[in-house]
Amino acid sequence: MSLFSGLYMGTTALRVASDALNTTAHNISNADTAGYTRQQVSQSTRHYHKIADATALVAAKQVGMGVQYAETRQVRDFFLDQVYRRESGRSAFYEVSYEALVHVQDLLGESGDRNFGEAIDDYWETIQELANDPSNAVTQGLFISKAQTLIERATNVYKSLKDYQNNLNSEVKKYVDKLNDYGKKLAEINKQIVNVEAGGIERANDLKDTRNYLLDEMAQLCDITYSEDVDGYVSVQIEGVDFVKRNVFYEMKLDEDPENGFYTPFWPHIAESTVNEKGEVVYSPEEVERGKVFNLDREISTAANTDVGRLKALLLVRGDHAADCSEMEDKDYYNREIAPSVCMNIQAEFDKLISNIAMSVNKILKDTGYTDGTQNTDNALFVRINKEGMADDEGWHVGNIAVNEAFLKQPALLNFVRDDETVDHEAADRLKEVFEAEIYTLNPNTEKRSAFKDFYGDLVVQVSNTGSVNKLLYEYQLDTQEEASFAREQILGVSTDEELQFMIKFQNAYNVASRYITTLNSMLESMISQFGA
Image (tube, rainbow, N blue to C red; front, side, top):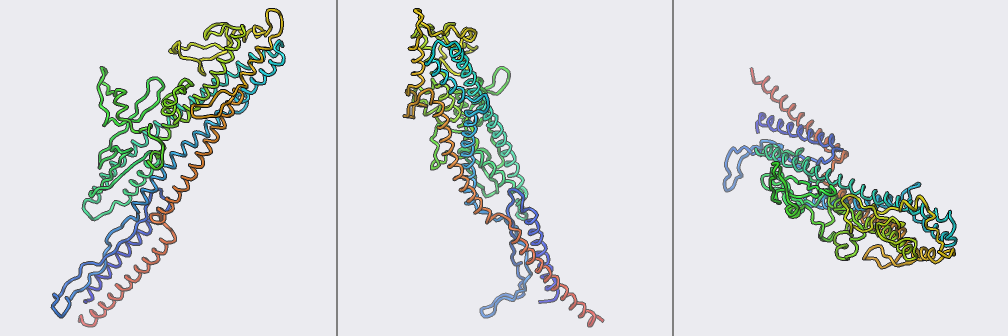
């Protein structure tokens, strides 16, 4: 091997060591960058220069051409990526469910003078005092005023539940907008990656890091599947439907319910549209149903992977309308439409308590002759407010129940004194008995029967117990996610200690190559000075 060949080999070693140092420095500088994947130097030998061909007895005469920097590759594990993304989506699903139950529990256990639990306890205590002395004017006044307080606070609780549904609805829109933003970016990055790598020389590793980060974020929002084709494009499906296909992005749209404003995500490329007289593209309810992104009728199950994604959990918790107790009459309908939603289930159970109290008290007062008990009469204690747009057969529900103004102005109308001027203990005792009668169940699936005085407490306990179960599920799932994340980080994560070792290694390699070149250069100078004259 000539000295000039040696110089060439030295320069290749110097160049590769320099590139390796740059890659190591890049790893260290991005150690804390979200989504960054550790990059690894891959080296290979250059083609040998053949001087003479091989014979039967003698190997080919070849001269090495040094080392070359083959590629900078990302260190990732496709299987661990899949596991982590699936578990992070499942963790987000149970986090939403748990947080919703905690929030509902806070709404039911309001603090200060708005506490509904105190309102119903006060009403029950007033009824007991009324049973002891029905003719006492002060007690009669308390009976009316506590009824008013009960209805006012019940209305506040139910309104708070509806407001929470509206907040969840806003969250649905926010996350759908996020998904669409991720989809647009992913389709654009796909094109950029393919353009960079088309020549087979460069690797778009930093762009791939951004793409993988987007996949991580999308996996938390919904159940995604993805694959990379031979050209380098990554295609993504959400709930089995194309969302990004190579460099094409399919937008997810929202259909807004005209009655309550609730959003339903759907695929416009599946649903058929029409153009109205204003020139606007519209979708019929049937087409929206056909193009729905999420099938919320499927049973929530880890085995079937139906418990994945924050967005799906939000839709389940929110439900599709504000529920009432009339929707609990058909058990199949209740289990299918009401029970899966935290908000709708609590609304229906809470409404059942208030409407039954109003109707039961009115019935007793009617049977004992103090009122005629009709729903809209001025003579009933509890009356129904016919709001605009409410049908006459709407029934008794929180929000349309009020205490009769006549009794608020003159509580003595309920004096509990018969025509013969004897005190009517019987009517007051019946009010007490109806609050103590254990004849009501929270919902069609529960067997325990509760009295009015215990119903609300049982409802709160139910929410608390369900919240505890969901907390355990969330914590277990969070542990699973963290284990998957730890296993993945062992491969793609950057260890600064390890990278510093690599830096020392490549620095030494650079120094050795430099000394090698310096030595050869000295030899050449010596030869030229001695034989050049």
